[in-house]
Length: 339
Image 1 (cartoon, rainbow, N blue to C red):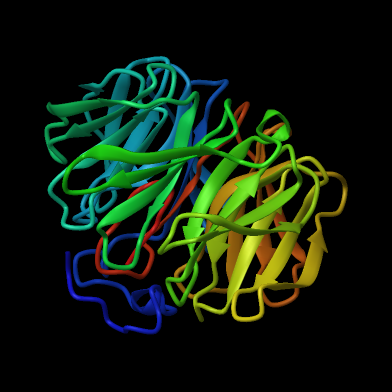
Image 2: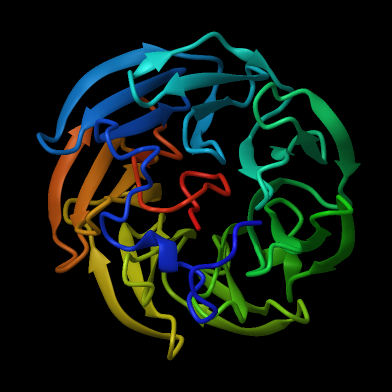
């Protein structure tokens, strides 16, 4: 694993416009997987205009940057494939056969891709370039979907959407160390996972409980629950490493959490009704791009004021969009978890 830039700030490499030389000359784009249309819409974030819409595999769920930042992978979940995109040229490549790729992550050393095979109850460790399987790990829960790593990269926390459980996974050993149910697990639906700036806790969004769980990242135990809004779903760290943006999909709002105090400091309501799901923050940190899952649109929101800047029509069921390029030295996966 590359040496951290700061022992006090997990996200220190993600400062505004701190682009890696690998991506510095790449055009700015927003890639939107339309899960109900089997397409990816490409948006120019400077003009807020759709450039084109490209057919991909069946039910694309997320667009994921590779560990080396050179490729974007479209997760065609029910199509059992990944579609590679060259973000330097915008070219969509030939599909790669991968079974049940609901989501995709990478080990911090870049050695393995980790396919979240949700329907198959598996974490699949694969070659990060060819996607050839190296090891399949059965998981004792239902609906593995999101994850993040401890600050030293030794372990990662995985959410299990359909059984209300969390997993602690040993990265090097590629095995589940611990599985436990959230309190009142029958009423829980854990979603996105993000490590705090100081590396001490994980935040886990819970769509049924309408908030985020705070999980001790050293002992892997529940510390507390913070109510945010109905349908808490996606988690995004601001470019100054201070705040966490939480999308509340079922009430059309975004909660802002101060990670130092672990207190909510604002709530932005998207005018006209909305279903904010997954997204990403612009390289300069000024705009939060997020998919409107049930409305066939993408929202561009000011991170300074919370005001809706633009609403852009895309395909049906837009989900895990990717803003690219973004700051960071390497990608851990999902729609852009960079360190």
